[in-house]
Image (cartoon, rainbow, N blue to C red):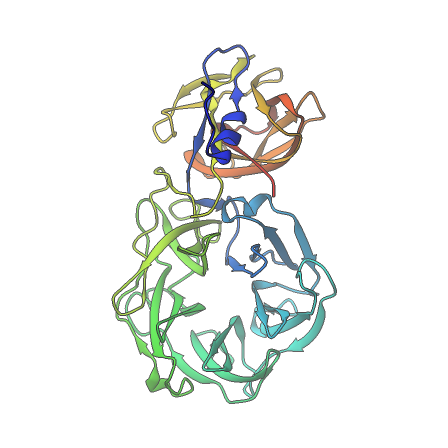
Length: 465
């Protein structure tokens, strides 16, 4: 009697079989988990899940606004991008909002002098923000027109509000949080109102004092304004919480209540978590926070981007917990397709390369010592369909001097290309990604010596969407 396959997804996963060259055992397995690095480099992440099912992501790049378009949260780093030119200088913490049928980018920039940082807006009426034309709508400001960064939009009670971090005067003593009413997505039509300034010890432990990175999430009539506090260049950077009722007068400071303790701080060997955004899983059933941390203890502004699921407290405020342990996998966001995982040590090694023990590795082993010309580790990859795939590797680099390194990645004897790995120490694993073309049937993936040194714990492969 013939067996009946009742699950097409399971069949597809079984067909996506990866076998290391020279080995008989199956080195691949389907995984529904991920280590929570989203990008191995970057700060001030903003992600927006649109009604078209795509995630639109941006972060501080410094010289422009870059938008990533990804079908899944875990594949953002390998997503195609659109660069939006903004002009000089020091472009910080851009956000992408969809309001009344149009897209808006809010970003801070200056003229080369930080004291002149102000907020600006661009508009795009295309259905897809990576297409169409971005129009400069100019500066968005209240009458005070003081130093301003990290602007975000709150839509509540049928009204628009702008919330940002700014100086009270013209001297960098303290960054406060301000709110103002908006008459349209590019115009403030009220005076600014201060709703928070650094006062608690965990907000005033470094100078200047900092409240910044405001983000809002609304649940059951409660507005949770989650903000970043303390010095962004320190391990003490953390998230605080201010709440208000949707039905209250949001331009009245008395409507906002500030918590006396941070709600998200350093933990599990991760430092300085902050400047975040909120989103949902692909199927809309889970809530996720995307945030940056220091790459290592004392890394300062050398940061990476991580994500994790969060829950809700009984008072309808977010329960963020602690940063997820970087060496314990977390479940994939609900609705994402599983990854096919190949452990690094399961490859065929040549030259000086070999597998060695890894205290923080997923299988207790890693591929490394690809240290000389002629050294390599190679894998056979068998896929049922030709096309574009995303390769996501858990990588590490502790090359002396602190520079980035790269291995050379070649597919099917094609020209090798650099596979970049940030430097944050051995056994401090990050994420390196590439989009690769695979042919139907057998393929060869080969890593060889590049610049500096790098190790591979494992790599995941999934078909690009």
